[in-house]
Length: 230
Image (cartoon, rainbow, N blue to C red; front, side, top):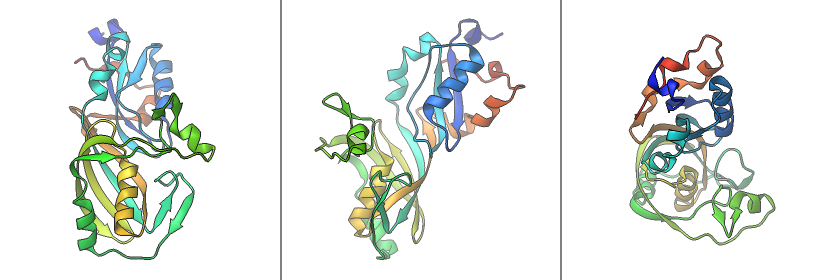
């Protein structure tokens, strides 16, 4: 048996399935390993997929800030012409617009999302203001002023076939990809929201190193061969 399991400590890289919450993944691993101290290096929304760095055991959950602060990369799909209150496909439609931006207009809008910028956290987020989570206020129909946060990013246009836009984003901790989608839509004058999101890298860990979340449900799955130390 590997040292990481002897000491009940290690890292497991999982490709999260769409429709599953980050908390569900933690609960699944607790059941699989009988280890209570399990965390992760950054949550993903239920509809999102991709790299989840699972921190197993006290030694690694204590180091969570070290992993949380690492840069991340994403592949995202935006839908132009429709805005939602959550800035993604899980929200209620707030506006629709039939303007069709040109490729040049889209490139111009994306050029504004390079380097260090100030980003306003969305109301539908777990960020706390005066001790209250923003999404708790948003669900009550309350909107408050949020202080912009400085983040660093590089956004690359991958493809555009109206109304869908595929982008790649490399960004610092605390960046909201759905806010990027919303803000691009606002700059274009047609609105937009995020419909697909996949995290392809978290710090030093890439999607190709991950195991599928579905494998964790198999009785034959042996977690020992996938755990790693760092």
